[in-house]
Amino acid sequence: MAKVFIDGEAGTTGLQIRERLAPRADITLVSVDAARRKDPAARAEAFAEADIAILCLPDEAAIEAVALAGDSCRIVDASTAHRVADDWVYGMAELPGQRDLIRTAQRVSNVGCYATGSISIVRPLVDAGILAPETTVVLTGVSGYSGGGKSMIAEFENGTAADHFLYATGQSHKHVPEIMKYGRLTRQPAFQPAVGNYAQGMICQLHLHRKDIGGADIARVTEALTAFYAGEQFINVVPAPARLDATVNNGTNRLDISVHGNDKAGIITVTATLDNLGKGASGCAIQNMNLMIGAPEEAGL
Image (cartoon, rainbow, N blue to C red):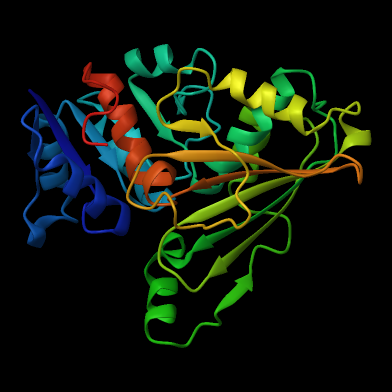
């Protein structure tokens, strides 16, 4: 039975991980008393007791937690702090060869929510030779407000936030480095995220002109995506719906990919729909943890 410590279990991601792990008979949750949850000594004791710790913390706090844990347990870090670090394994199991690396890793960095959606639709096309790494890529997306943390959640729930707004307009979103590294892009993509007035759910979009992808049409793009994810249980290529619902996969670890556009007009849009707190956060962390402890990959998901 694996002992798991969720450092930061009171946060949005931590609460969802705990909720999914609590009923499992193969997991024992290691906890720190609420009054001592910021006490380094109490946390060090929890790290020492655990087989695996899942960090649901801001970046600086996650870096401190790794130092505090030392080599006492294996770690899944849900922060941005280690996502492009060479000595950490990137926790996106569906990428080629990544699942085996995760199984044996001491340190796994969980994928960002926008990065999950973006990489899932970019990487297969790069690997298939359809999308050249140096292509000027345009990515857009919209997410529920839960991905913005406590302050943004409070704005929406007390009615002071706009119903929909763009953010990170300076082209410096924190997920871009991992999108480039694991999407295998050599030129920074134009990336524009947005927030909608709903709690959970996300759509990421990759916008392409056929002239920039060697004339590949919708069928060829769909074929490449389908081949890449053949046999995967959580990522599926589905027929393009007339309307895209960002909340359709809420509460699951599913990610649905669909291909839209018009071959005659020469424009193709590839979309990924997921729960930003599921496959984009807590679900991915549990999927990685399952691989690390030798549990069925879908356990708790």
